[in-house]
Image (cartoon, rainbow, N blue to C red; front, top):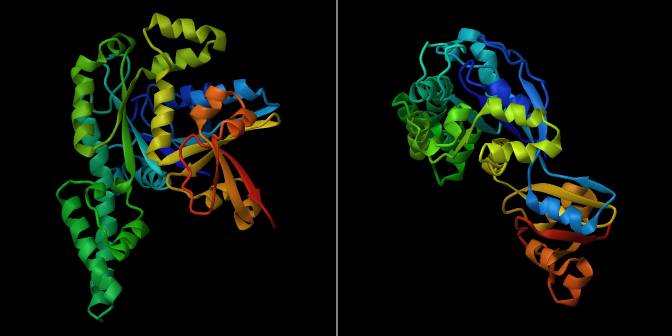
Length: 368
């Protein structure tokens, strides 16, 4: 399942540093000047999951395959991007291809790192990015609205509905509100919205990039709280990290990372929170297949039924689906093996209507 989280923000806010840390290597160039990143960098990262780690310890498989999510480091946007400034058209196109957005916001002072507006103001930075996305969306909506109005005059029922939702979108965008604030229960209107691929309709979470000194007391940091205030209004999560520190952590040998984290008062790298948040923003869950040969985490959309979940493994599994044998993760960990779960009556047999739950351990029976 190829799903992308686009990393966006102004130039020099720490996007490429974060991306390099995510991949635990220097893949994206990180430098102290605007538009250091031009072409988007793409990387697939493992989703940290203690359940997967526990299952691999229980089964000691020959092979282990964790869940993954794709991150895309998109070059910094600037004011005027919606009109093509700073390679804006190309950058906005990269965002359009992402399924969700990680918006990196600079929340640290450092005279040695340039800011495109010569000041550190998280709220203003967020407003700059949002405004460019909204302006581009407004242009898209107005073009579509013009076509819909012409078609509606010919009594096209679908286009009449399109006019209604497009006028609502136009009003919201014109007022400076993102397209995500416009909702509908009408399937035709929802289709119109989906077909527009609006930038400001994408799910977003904020990454507040702070200095090492700010990490210890970021709950009371005014720059971080400025981001939280906006995120609360948008119903979006906030992850607080120091991208520079995360980069240092990932360059250490794995056996030294725990001690370094402890010295910083951290239980886990902030990157883990970024990855998990991106995964959750895409409305993804994980089910597992376990055995001596392999323990694997499979990624599916929430509310996926058993045959479609089986189809992620192979199309034949879905086509010839008979039933799914399901063990809950907690039961597997408590009892220690599939055989013990069967003996204790903790394995259920589910049919085509079963909705797979996050953490289910599955075995599919099929016939083709």
